[in-house]
Image (cartoon, rainbow, N blue to C red; front, side, top):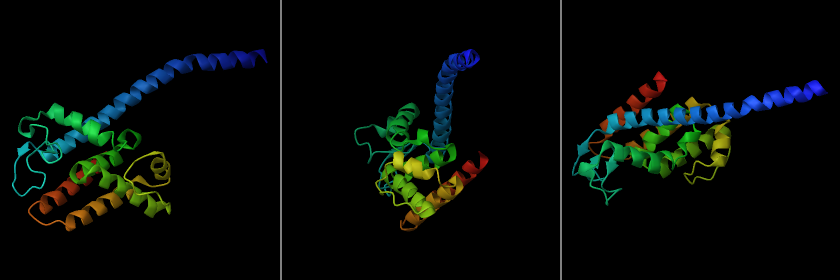
Length: 193
């Protein structure tokens, strides 16, 4: 019995530093995933564009004047765009809780098609694959995350991208070809990981 107590104490003492290290490492990993996702989106979105046919109006780094009327879009810095991405897209979709590839798919979908729509596509995909009946509210909360554990990530990503292609097919205009190429590049990006 004395040996058992000693062993228990020995196991508990080193565990605390491991937890601290794990928390630090997890935060660094998540920030690395977010950084890679931002690099992809910025590469796809490019710099300043003011196309009169774009319903978002003036756009820089994927941030549109229509969505952020209070901002000076023409002079928006990349760092400011990344802060917006983190607060209004990454955190809103709870992407820290998702595997990196799926996080990238939802992040890019949220930026290009809206976060609520991207969240709903995730929930529809989960419902199709599991038979669950998640409420389609676009919120990536506990129930959505629990149900996601029953899914194959590739199947979820393929369904989300198919929903996105169907969404684009309903659109008209000069942006369709670019949107389809963007999905192809997104598929190439997630295949690299």
